[in-house]
Structure formats: structure tokens, C-alpha cells
Amino acid sequence: MALIRFCLLLLLSLPALAAEPRANPSPQDSARTLELENQPVFVFQAEQAGLTPEQRLQRTLQRIRGLDDEDLKQTVRYQPLADPRLRGMALSINGKPLLTILDGDLDPGDQLTLEQAAARVQARLNGLRQAALEQRSPEQIATSTLLALLASALFVAALALIARIRSASRRRLARQPIGRLPWLSGRFDVVRFLRAAECQLVDITALLSALVAGYVWLSYTLSRFPATRPLGRKLGQSFWQLLSTIVDDILSALPGLATVAVIFLLTRLANRALTLLFGAVERGQLDLPGLHAETVGATRRLAAVVLWLFALIVAYPYLPGAGSDAFKGVSVFFGLMVTLGSAGLMNHAMSGLVLIYARAFRPGDYVRIGEVEGTVSELSTLSTKLITGQGYEITIPNAVTVGGRVSNYSRHHATAGAMIATRVTIGYDTPWRQVEALLELAARRTPRIDPACPPQVRKLALQDFYIEYELQAKALPDAQTPQLRDALHGQILDAFNEFGVQIMSPHFVEQPATQVVVPPVRWREPPAGQ
Image (tube, rainbow, N blue to C red; front, side):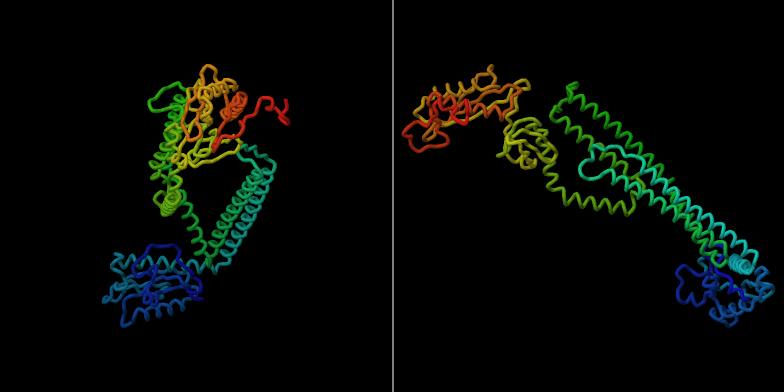
């Protein structure tokens, strides 16, 4: 039987030679290429004794088809041409000529001699011949079959072991409880979600292990038989090349990862040192110019962000794949997102820094921002939250807070209380000295007003029909401003009603026929009680 029927591919993958087919041959080269079972062996390029390269190819194919079994047992040899007029090498097997390699078949760019080209073609043909002999040998086929069966048995055992390990891992996960996560609460079943994620991770690991085992089994089994050995070797080479690439990439990335680890370790140490420094300032153990108790927290966070960003910039070139297109694409994506969404965000963030470093107020202060009045519950980077007297939580963007007027009723000495101010309008028919005395009396009667600080009354404006007075009193340090103001208003009403002075708020057009006051005997009429 002819050699072309049995040979499938080359014994070894050899580098590109002169007179060899290229990776992307042209149609003209394909018509001159000697192929055995779709495997290129040699390319004829020169004419010989009036024969074109295509005719030389057909003559070689005819000679190969004429080979018998005894010929295949012999080794392919080469020797210089006997014709002194031609410079070339003749390849033969068992004394039968196969083909000739002429000097014109060589590509000058390959820089190879005739002997080197002939040796390469000889190695190819001998490899194909050996594959054909193995294909015909019953002993070789039996041995290959036994090895393939043994490999199949090991593959089945590996699959069974993988399935058993997977089942054992899932059972162990089912028995192992997950600790409580106080930072994750609500209706969302976190435990079930984490358990499902762990089970999915086990399944994916088992599937990947099975695929690797199947790939190795298929590569080994195919390489046992001459007919499928090229494919098996190709699969094996691809697998080992992949492993080699992964290991090489890991080893190449180790120095960079070590550098990144050192950078982040130093950054962590520097961050901890800054935390200790700012903590000492916050506790009052250390005094640094420009740092106050209200701003030290924000300064600590800003310093940490700047420090870690600087560390990331320094470590970025050492990260594996930092110069790849994937990293570049991610950088462009995040840059686009920051550009599109940072306009309003940065406005509020910078306004928050202005509020913090201006020390306009702090959590716990009773303030008035625009038309909203309440106690500051939170001063964050983007917004300020107030708790009103009705118990509502009002969120005000920091940009709005900075753009408006802020009245801080709690800004006073640390050991003193807040200043409480209220206004009343009284007609011109009431002596202003009496009004001042009544307001001072109401302030002295009000609980939680500091008796050590006398209340003050100011005449703010002389309107068309009334005089506008303002009462200012200092509260005790532990007094609550909304409750204290409510009590002060009640005492003012009682004092003015007790002495028969009518409060003309907000306006009046003419004097009423009778005074609009409530005598003391009517202060507790039902359902007010006694």
C-alpha cells in the first residue's frame, strides 16, 4: 500500500525552511506543494530537465504511490545528484527515487544549504514512514489500545473522585454555620446568598477540574495512535504551552507584586502614623497650628485619601497587566464616568469641605439654614441633616447650605448655654419701660434660663403702628433650645396678660374697642385644667 495512505503529518514541528510551504501560502505555492494527507512536505520552485514545478510534483506523487510494504521498512536517504550539470540532492527509499531538491528550489532569504534542506525533508519523510509502519503493526495497535483503555479508566476514576469531592464539599458547607454579620441586615437573606455563592464556587471548581482531566485524557489518547497522533500532540503542546505561559507570567509578575506590597505596606504605616497624630490632636493631647477639633476628622480622611491615591499612582506601573489594553479600557471608562458624574458631586463635596473648615456648625448645634431650623444630626461630605422640632429629618445639600444664610444658635463658649432670642410688637400706647420689665420678668420666670446672665431687651424698630422689641436670654448649658423657646413664649404671654398689655403682632389697623388680653382667672379654663 502506498505511503500516502498512511502518513498524516510530520514527526516534529520544524522551523520554516527554504522550499517549505509558508503559514499563508499563495495560490501559486499551493499548486507546487507536495502534500501527504493534507500535510505539506516540500515546495517545488525550479524547473528540471524541462519539467515545470507542477510536473515535478506530479512525478513525485506517482513515485510515492508506487511504493510497497517492503519499501516502507527502509530509511529515506539523500545524496548529491549524479548529473554534474545540476546542483542538487536526490532523495530515495530502498533504491527507488522519490524527489530531487535543486538549488533553484531554495529561497535565498532562508540562508540554508542544499544539505540542510535535504536533511529536513528526509526527517519529515522518515517520520511519515514510521507512522505508517506503526499503523500497520498489530502489536503497536494493541499496545496503544491498552494504553488508551487504561487512560480512559483513569479518566473515569478522576471524574468519580471529582464528583465525590464536590458532594463532600457541599455537605460540609451545609453543616458549617455562617457567623452573624451585623453590618448586613434587613429582609435580604444574606446567609442564603453566601451559601449559594459558596456552592456555586465549588461547582465551578469541579467543572474546571473535570474539563482539565478530559483535556489531558483526550490529548494522551489521541497521541497513542498514528492516525490521530498529530492532533494529540498539538493538544498536548497547547496545554503545556498554556501552563508554561501562566507560570512564566506569574514568575514575571512576582517582582512587581513584591514592589506593590512594599509600597502599600509603607503607605499603611504612614496612614497609621497620621491617624495617631490626628487622634492626639482630636483628644487635645497635641496642639498643631491650623488644626481644630471640628476639622481634624475631615483632615484625617483627606490625608488618608491623598496618601492612598499617591500610593496607587506609584504602584500602578508595577501591577500585572498595567500596560495592557484591558487596563487602558477600564481607565478610560472610569475617567468617562467621573467626568460625566462629578460636576454636581464635586460641587457638594467642596461645599462640605467649606462648611467643615469654616466651622460654621457641628453635629449637635441648633441652627437655622434658610427656612429650616433644627439640630444638626450629621455633617457629611455631600449633605447636612437637621432634626426639626417636629422630629422630621431634613436633608440639605451642602451647596445649598453654603449659598444661603446659616444662623448658629449654639455657637457659644463651651461652658455656657445658647442665646435665645424672640421678638414681640407692642403698640405705642404702652410705655416701653413697662414692656422691657415684662419681657425681663418672663425671662426670669422661664426654667433653664441662666439667672447669672441678666436678660437684655432691645428696641429694634419703630414701625407705623407698633414698636418691635427683641428679648435675648442665655440658656443653661444643658438646655434644649426648641423646648426652652416654647417655655419662654408661654411666660411672655402670661406676663403680658397678667398686667393687661396687648401684644400687637403682627399688625393692626386701629385700636380695638376693648383690650385683647386674657385675665389670669381664665388661664386654666377647661379643658386646660387647674
